Image 1 (spheres, helix red, strand yellow):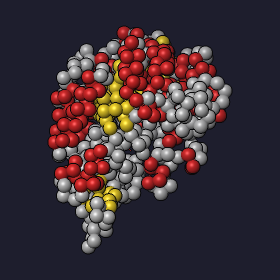
Image 2: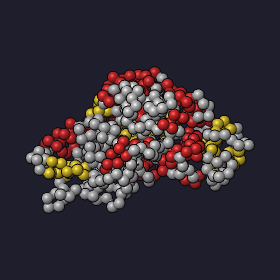
Image 3: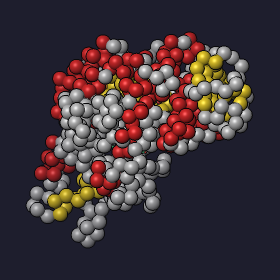
Image 4: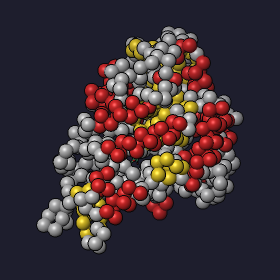
Length: 521
Ligand code: ISL
């Protein structure tokens, strides 16, 4: 790792484009909506944007089903819009990283359409996982794998002769067929995609399902009872060792662009296995999801930090931290909702921003948005809802559009009242406009915290040392002498030695109250 790499101590801000800002009044966010609000990101002192997928897509999984990886969907503004975004972001000193989705394509991708038309045994089918079914008439799927979104991971096709025929594999929705990375054409095409965006000035990529591109020979059955939207390390659908060859190939391409970064979505819990993705010739960064998995509990927080640092230590990689994204419950809700959930979310944000390494902030986190738990069933769009037989409501609750201004929905997100997901009336108190003028607001809190993190020398450095603390608190000294204390207990505790420079809530009689974190130097 180069100590000077811009991404080694950066703040990435994840934009879920459907939900950020709508520029053309169709109720769905788009790239020009983001261009129009870059001042918001500048005021947050973010270093880089991670833009969730905006390529041509039928939107079965809101862009994670890509039909043309080298073009922008008209819904998001087409190629001219991304060109405007690249230059406008760069003018403000903000880098742009894009999501790429190498594990699968959309079923509308020309390769998949060609595979359907070509029939069994053809080269066109070798770009995907087509298999004959089991049973006397092929009436059973080739193995017992389930889709991450629920239901079987196999869909049977109607062959060109009009009869039911082979099955194809899709670890996600039916409309997201898995690519066969053993076919060299798949890598060659992905290389074209990487170069296409890098040549246009994009600063790097978030690689979707980076642990999924390789499948074990023979596609052996998985154990029964795998839950929707989760998997363990022994799941044959993911993390097959040959995936590392793919990452080495990707790295060779990206290394032609010296400042470009790759960030892998690696849902692997075992430290040694996870760390393999961060070897010097593989990914630059890997998401570490441990902080999204734990409660507001001092022991769990210490354990998650220790574990994450142990994992990156294996191959001398850069630590990364994230509290939420477009796939997981928002932290305000995870920590209990309401006022207490928000206090804890702010405390955890302060803790995360004190840790050495790179952080990822999910759009809306800076406003203290909670999940919207009462979305009516008829508006739910995440494929998980249908595929789980209406037992899992899915991830729409953390993807509700951002409230910008005004007193009623759509809160300046769009000129249309018909936003792609309805916005709760009570978000009137959470708009950017309302929070911007209030020094106590969550937005002001994030702006101040991120400004301090960028400016103060105490935030340089990569060390972390635990300090003595009550068992229900977390206290550490990190980087260039910054001390962070978080109280997850029920009574106020004395502050550690040092001068307090910032806190996530008011101190009481010079003590750190429950559900508050503070920085000291
Ligand atoms: O769901 C998971 C953990 O909560 C993981 O098992 C799974 O790998 C993850 O959902 C993968 O997510 C990514 O790829 C999906 C897409 O729907 C997600 O939004 C994206 O982040 C398919 O492309």
